[in-house]
Image (cartoon, rainbow, N blue to C red; front, side):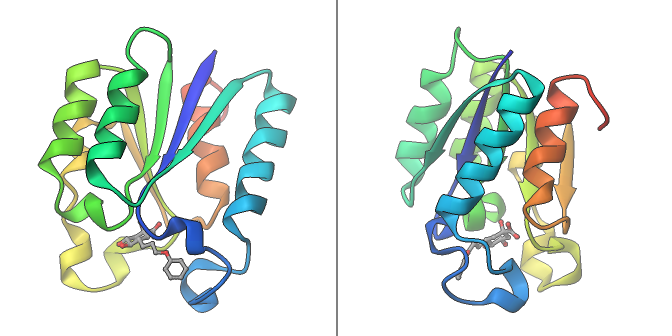
Length: 143
Ligand code: CA2
């Protein structure tokens, strides 16, 4: 099974600022955790991060035909991007939305998610473990 893990804007800053909201694990350490988990579960994983909406759309489109599942944390584009929603719908790849923080317990604008409309499941507020849970869900394990 091949899974693409996509992270949107500012998630490359993980562990550098706002540790009270996003924890102390850096983006590089998150990638290592995801790769180690994938190896343990026999998942072929690819990782992508961009701060640019169109690049995220391109990454989703490029997954068409070669990827079984997408784990996506679109960052702030969660709350604004019809383009990312449309890309997920266009490729019709099973997807899980992940948020490190509990978006429903923060500002009202974070309660809106366009991307959610194309996702089977949302995992929010489980910290970086949310990514691993999303992979397990797509791989048919304990999700
Ligand atoms: O909780 C999440 O994972 C979010 O997707 C993170 C986004 C935020 O806009 C969403 O509402 C919820 C922001 C990511 C910013 O990450 C930072 C990491 C370190 C320091 C500052 C920002």
